[in-house]
Amino acid sequence: MSNESGEIQRLRRTIEQLSDQMIRSKEQAVDAGDSKIAFIAGISHDFRTPLNGILGMAEMLKLSPLSEEQENSVSVIQDAAKLLLKLIQDLLDLSKLEAGQMRLELGEVDLQETINYIIRLLEPQVRKNGNQLSIDCDPRISTLLEGDSTRITQILINLIQNANKFTSEGTVRIRVALMKDDEITQMIRFEVEDTGIGISEEDQNQLFQPYVQTERGRSSEYGGTGLGLSICKSLVTLMEGQIGVDSQEGEGSTFWFELTLGKKDGNQSVASAQGHQGQDMDDEAPSVSVLLADDNVINRQLVLLQLKKLGITQVDAVVNGEEAIAAFLSKKYSLILMDYMMPVMDGLEATRKIRSIEMDEMRHTTPIIAMTGNVMQGEKDKCMEAGMNDFIGKPFTLEILSKMIEKWQQSSEPTEVLNMSIVHEIAELNTDGDRTLLGMLLDMYRTDTPGKIEALRRHIVSGDHVAATEVAHDLKSGSLSLGVRYLSTLFAQIEQFAKEGQSRKAEPLLDALLPAYQAACTSLQRVSKD
Image (cartoon, rainbow, N blue to C red; front, side, top):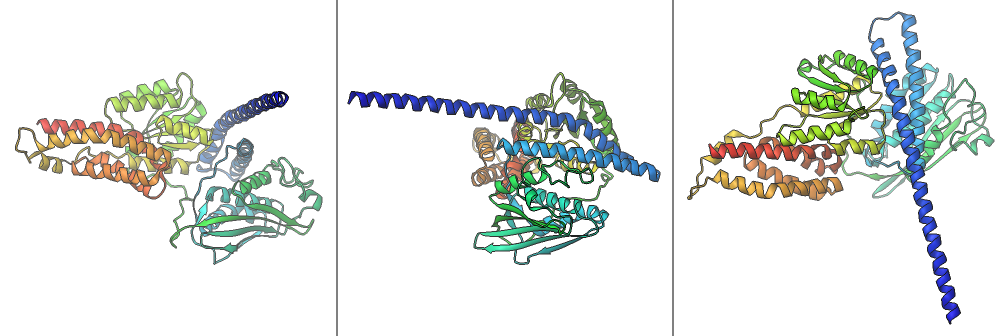
């Protein structure tokens, strides 16, 4: 019996040792993966910064009078820079997929709108190769489905561009068919068929591996990174689907993938958020004042030119976070464009200090837009946590910058802290005692509101849409009753986001709540004393 007991003890120690080794191995693997991600993210930022300058300046050149030869030269610059940008994005996507850091963003999928967008985007490239583009979309597919629209679009664009690359004076056909249909899901099959050079059976067997290209695909005639199909397969697998190819050498290819997507209630199509024509800001644009913080001289010059093209000339440029804070203290800006990585003080620390100043001095929050070449989700989260309102990845076009400024300029228009007509009505309603009704209500508001704001923050961050909707509605109602105007509009926006199941979109508003609450209480106290 004692021998058995000793053996059990030895086995237990062995198991514990193995368990410890497995844990250490896992931690080492995670550390290695994190280090790889961090390295590639840093390289991505370093590459994207000069690329932003190249693409941006090329775009500005295209808008100026040029000879035909000059236009062709600018087009070559743009094509080369875009190819390099594609390589960087492929490497970044691959590293995130390998490290298990790629996350799906589930939302509404309007397949018809998605296809229309892709056609508008790619049809000029297809025609340039002398090819015809045709579409066949099954009418039985639900108008609205649930899935990751961005990743579906990414896969389709990759497959269509591949088909077009290996086809000349031929046809590229897109088919979207309903395979299975039940009460809550639909299985959709996507096919991209071409009449191009085709793929041998030997090459088909290893086609979806990283860095693998067919023998002909490796030739300088076609180029490419050898990562596109591997990324497509990883994304389809992440969405629990299947992907494959049917082809005969010399007779074209059909790449296909199948996904099961959830059904959404309602039959109305969601309007596409994709814009395709660049446009200047309206007549109100000159009233916009911008603080630009970026240590890279090329980027600063480019953004200044882009802002000038948009009609925005009230711009102050600084080269680090400390200078940004000094400028912020000396002048009121409509919005701040803040680079993520700068010397002396980076954009995150500068944003935290600006938000702290706004809270201490009870100022309205100034929209702060992060600018960075590192477009990984983790970096976006850091920007939001620091108090930034939005994120713009380098390189960005004139159109993207225009839409970002329009979005936050509209939301930052000055709003009255109080609705004075309501406040005055309350102030005139005295109670039987010496204290006014306004003073009593203000005390109650001060007692309840901070705790409710903190609860709302927790519900938004945790994604509890139902609880967030209830608390935001309660705070909105209480604020409106007391004549608190600006703060109630913030609660109303958060309530709407939560109702739509998009609490994450409300996160940038959270940092504005406490300063707005403090400003409202100060104003109410002043009226109460008067």
